[in-house]
Image (cartoon, rainbow, N blue to C red; front, side, top):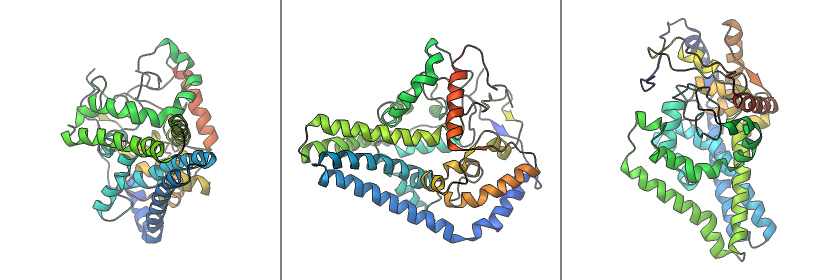
Length: 366
């Protein structure tokens, strides 16, 4: 079946629950500008902390313990900046001025990736169509893991609930050295090239970002510090292992659990539900009552609110989620929320079940 036709959602009337929900959120929660100003301060402090931690590698790294310590804190701060600043800036939610948001997103080039391609992946494919097979590029990433029911099953998938927890530790390294290149040059299952053409300048920026990142985190420390190259490389590796573990924890907890649905695009291209109900159905919250989780995960734990209000600062989400819960009860909507540990365990069960021969997941059209 040809899945290249862009899916569309059913139109809704003015009394649809989301129109009422949106009106209430705008008239109550969004009236407090201090909540958004908190995000500005938070995103700038975390960004400054990231660069400060990196400078500590260069100036204090001759001490072996401090070398590893600051590589680790730099990795953690890299993910904190990604979750709490970059992600909001991509949605235009940090600053009123679009130009400032655009500038902030270029931190991804410092991390070694390409902000242009990430924004296209996220805004044009994942956000409109979470969990939709042949469209959500964040779910279908590699043949090493089978999550989509229509994905080809290999014999090694029956062990994926074991080996993927090891491979997840290399998530950021995979992003740095493999995933970006697949987006730019891949021909098989390249969802992105179905809907966009990549400007030539972005190819140059891609390679420039890789070179700059490796010079910053390997070249300069090897040159400046009194350690052999393999010590610096091991600290660099530890940084990515820690960053990956932290980052993956938030990514796997919002969409891919054992109860998730992975629908196929309808034959006629019309998804027979409203956009808002679809977002609630395919998105999960986790640990929403934890102030610590609210701080470190940058609204990813209030993921339903984020998918319904993507252009709103994540610092508003703890105030929006209780309203969503109330509407979910009133309109019988499939809202779900779990503690973080339960969400992670549920992902383990998804890996285990989807690696079996039989298809245990909802994969029909909607």
